[in-house]
Length: 263
Ligand SMILES: NC(=O)c1ccc[n+]([C@@H]2O[C@H](COP(=O)([O-])OP(=O)(O)OC[C@H]3O[C@@H](n4cnc5c(N)ncnc54)[C@H](OP(=O)(O)O)[C@@H]3O)[C@@H](O)[C@H]2O)c1
Image (cartoon, rainbow, N blue to C red; front, side, top):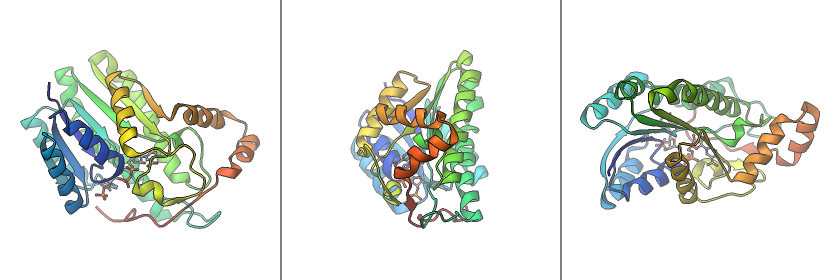
């Protein structure tokens, strides 16, 4: 049966792959991003695949715009699944360089507050309907502090904690909450990072894994499994040992496209 699905960050990478994958089942899709031409092209491909699509260019930081659009969309077609995927990555531009305060703030505003702005307008409605599912895209970086991207890691650890807390709160009310923790997925974001990237996978493969995890209502959808396990164990190591084992995996991040852009 067709379902109604909202995806943020649908104009690129993992969100784009998820949109195209769900489009093939003729679902009703609300696709959000910032880059209108790119978003429109993806919306058109989703329509050609059989989906009913409403695209909207909204910055996830603009909480009033998010609330107004999401609630209007939900009035027309009650939302079954929200995937809060939009995010940015930034970190050390050169070895051991500190990220700027503006960048740190933008990361938290987009990766943490943006997730809340995506979920909160719909959540009370799902609770009233006693039905619905929320998916939050975090990262494997949530498991292991990254010296080269402190604010990115912090924002991803925060949404992991937020999602799992919501899951405990909302499961008795019939709402599923899953946190998605991808490893390296070959997207424009990942290409900003310079360093070793074990087990990179294409976004289509990531989308298929995410879909399977959501069907099973998994609490944490972390992949690839071995890399996820190693990262989790790495996060539990004593400080000195953790820094030593992490040394070969230090990286730099090229200036990211528009992380500091105001909403
Ligand atoms: N790729 C990886 O290896 C990897 C690994 C772990 C976790 N993740 C997470 O996966 C998610 C998707 O990343 P990706 O790799 O697919 O990156 P991507 O290709 O750069 O796509 C990021 C998406 O987020 C949107 N976005 C960014 N800032 C936004 C804002 N302020 N308001 C609205 N939309 C915004 C972008 O929209 P516009 O392009 O239209 O601006 C784009 O659609 C992110 O949360 C990321 O942290 C990625």
